[in-house]
Length: 115
Length: 113
Image: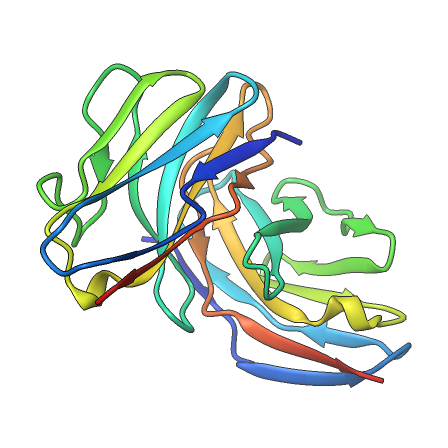
């Protein structure tokens, strides 16, 4: 399985500020995704992080609020901008490895609390 | 649009017994993959088992097995010889060939000693 790390693992932030979450994979992957898991809820896809181009956002998520970068095949960042308490969630990155479309692995998640 | 439905928000089972978690789905794709993920309190999403839609044989991983009924669009998970460490949220998920996952709402499983 791919080894995926996320930083930070958790943070407590003030309303109106921004937080950037990093996702690092130990091998080259074809697809990288960012999901949100609100308290007690299931996972919802925010966007697909595309290497070298703009991310593809799902309905209800916009680039101004959740800018995403993916400068290479092993690294991506998600920024949660102008945060409000409603953004308090776990944010997870996931990856699909080259040649293994039948597996998707998740990072350990970042628990964000917005006061 | 793809949908995944888990109709059991919570379930409990005695240690060493067998439990089955239900999942139904809908997709217009002909080639797709189905997954069961486990999320313990540590929040790490762990892939438990996967099934390719074009394979008729049900997947098995040690104590975990699935009952894949393609015509009925059903994908249930059976956990045999339940252990305390199986206590977690279980999510059923669907994807088409390496793309985004669509998750069900989850089933909270409690294994009782």
